[in-house]
Length: 338
Ligand SMILES: [Zn+2]
Image (cartoon, rainbow, N blue to C red):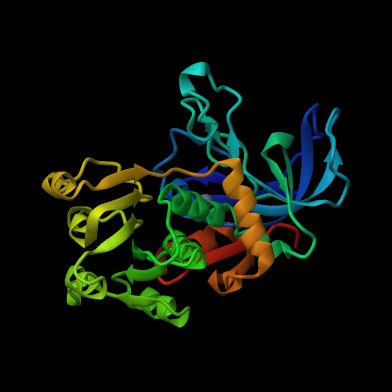
C-alpha cells in the first residue's frame, strides 16, 4: 500500500506503507480522498514539528470505505462508505467535564498520530461515521471542514433572518457562510483577497474588501441602525479582531474560529457597552459530523465548487509547494488510491 510520509523540511516521500490489521474496536479503511487543510500546511511549514513524529503520514480530511473489521466491531460491512472524525479522546479524564472533543490530552489524528495521506488507514471505530451511498467520496472528503462550519454555526446559534458577517473567506469561512445561509441567515463576507471576493460573489454572497469599504457603516444601514447579529472571525487578522466589535448589534455574538497564537488587542469597552458575547469554537462534536453528513448528502450546498484540484499521493512535496504559493486555491484533494 502507498503512503506519503512527511519528512520535515517541507518534504514528503512516497513509500510502501504497512497494512495494519485492525485490532479489537478498530477498522481498516481504504482511503479514497484526503483534503489538504490549513493544519497540514502548518505541518509543512515546520510549525508543528514538536507534535508530528517525523517521518509521519499526516492528513485528516478524508473519505473512504471499510476494508477490514476488527474484533467486536458491529454495524459495519466491507465496502461501507465512511468518513473519520479525527479526534482520539481516549486519554480523557473527569477534569475535561465531558467535553471530549477538546479534552486536555486530545490526540488530533493526522498530527499527533498517523493520518490519512495513505491508501490504507487503521482507526478506532468510535471515530468512524457512515455516509449514505448517494454521497460521492470526493464530496465526502469535505465533511470534516463542513463539520467545523456546522459546529461554528451551532455555537453561534444562528437563526433564520439574522444578519451574519463572516470575516475571512478561505475554505472554512466559505463553509461557515454556506451553512449560516442554509440556516436562513443573510450572510455578508469581509475578505481582502480579490479572487476570494469574486468566488464568494459567484456563490451569491455579498462580499467586499474592508480596506476600501466601510463595512460597519453598511451593516448598520442594512439593519436599521442596529448592527450584525453574529460575527464569525475566521481571518486571524489583528485588525479584524480589533474592528469586529464595531460590526455588532447590542447583545451581538462573536464566534472565534481563527487561531491566534499571540494575544491581540480587543475593544473591551464595546463588549461592556453592548453586552457582546464571545464564543470560542474548536473542531466539532459527533452531532456536528452527523449534521455535516446530512447537509452534504442533501446536495443543498455547492460543495463541489470548493474543490480546486485533485492530485495523487506520489508528488505531495510539489502539491504543498503549489498550495502554499497560491492564495487563491480553495480545497485540494489527494486521490489516495490511484
Ligand atoms: Zn482540517
